[in-house]
Length: 128
Image 1 (cartoon, rainbow, N blue to C red):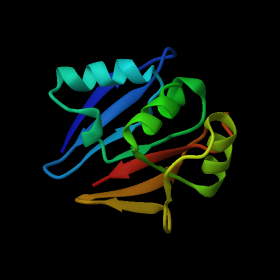
Image 2 (image 1 turned 135 degrees about the horizontal axis):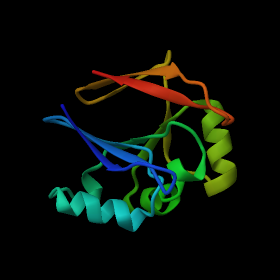
Image 3 (image 1 turned 135 degrees about the vertical axis):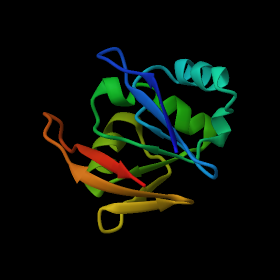
């Protein structure tokens, strides 16, 4: 597994996770174009991203989400509460709910963990 931080800080957060079978993003808090440019530098096409995990709904974690998912039809993994919060901000989108606080995306097992933050719903991830 490889992890690449595409951006970090108050201007936007996004992280790429790659395995032999899977490419996912965690958050997309910069512009969609910024993420596309960063993926291009790594030789990755945006359409290769199979899923996006969202830690919480603050702008520095979701700023580019709407544009990216509508353009590239990428599925977003969320809880019911987080879906509701995001839908109010970006409209409806293709999503998958975590089952028993986990998701399996090809060769990745993602377990969600609660984190402490001042958002309506927030989480971290343990990825194996």
